[in-house]
Amino acid sequence: MEDFQIKYNKTSQLLKKAVSYYYHGNSCACQYPRFMQIVGINCIHYKASFKAWETTLLIEKVKPYFEIETLKNGSENTNEKWTCRKCKSQFNYGWSDFSIAVERDVLFPIKLNAKEKGEKAIKPIPLYLGLYGHSYPSKKEITNVNFDAFKTYIMEK
Ligand SMILES: [Zn+2]
Image (cartoon, rainbow, N blue to C red; front, side, top):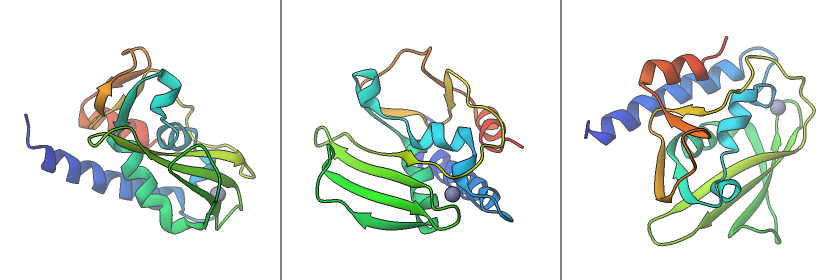
């Protein structure tokens, strides 16, 4: 395996760049369909048990741009309401672990105020670091691509 840590750091830097691009000027991440797609990857939708590294990384990078409120109830182990500081769109954030080895987080919109811009999301979802877990969706849903292809997808101009 190509050193996972190197690949991870490379992806982390790229996603940091993507996030600073989203918040450039008046815009915010909520407007970008490909952002929404990747932070919203939820293994439960595929009746599988995995995490997508890109999902966790992108949620982590975007976190400072949201007001966060803990919710007492919800279907996840951790449930939070995230409100975009710019457009006030609201999201639910959830974190759950399915086993000692597999945990995942997810962010999905409950009230969107932003007007969509940027390139449309496509399927299969192209990821570079990809998935980790016990069971996976078909390659028609999520597929592995090289770094440049993922970079092009996420830097959508
Ligand atoms: Zn927003």
